[in-house]
Length: 400
Image (spheres, rainbow, N blue to C red):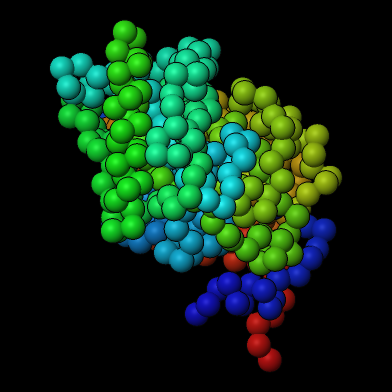
């Protein structure tokens, strides 16, 4: 069944409001018998779960570990197999980088290279101020490669965006990133004949950067992934007749929101700022996507305690969401990031939908194992959007 076709036919514009709270990387695996969610003290989420319909959502398919791009697209109701996005374009657009039709962009990390091994993929999470200085140094030192202009744009901590501007560039490239620490550097590989020249330009660029940064104690190498050009996606307004807004701190999530037609609202860098921004803009939109990153960052660092604390901190803001009285409030995640694995995983995400139109189940706590007993069961996350729209009264009857 073609959800996109149905959505265009039966979506209706109403005054009802939907809040989607995404606690990035929320799902976990047991450490000493409990996941981070099970170990966390979450009285507000637990009370809400008892009044909601719950389940477990698989971002793509069972067993598939998703990147943040496809995982979020699925939550927004887009088929992640049809709309394939490179992480670079999401990071670039989220950082305010202008990307022309012929430009190629990639997401980058400053990293630490020692004895020809990548010993730290994040260069110790260098301060953003140091990142800015490194980008400025490289931009002033780099030369065009075969007529291709190269420019770096600093992000938070160790992250940056690099843009290659020139004719004939291809994004059919593998990542120039070993993905694990204490591994040798890996070059970008052409995935098509047409990409061979681009791959050589990329690899020459990386070599030049390493040569320029050879005197740097920690950030002396770069890793690139998510090579991509500018895609074209239909907007959420076209699909669902929504006026959507995004509230997020990190560039990639802002970029993704812009690609699907959300207004990205200015907000501060701390968790309370997200909810203050929501309250200030609540009257102006009917769909709000709120992104919390700290749960994912702690999971990737393998820090069980920090992830548990990030969950507990997020829990304290649930009353502020409920005070706005949205017709639908959903709390879930884009993917799981168990601290036990220190990476994204294929495990399903706990899912909670609160609405006057929902049939509450017997779930008493917002945890992975409790949500598995909810009425929604285990389902593909692409159904999250029709569920939200239906409970908000934004879908008319399908068929005669």
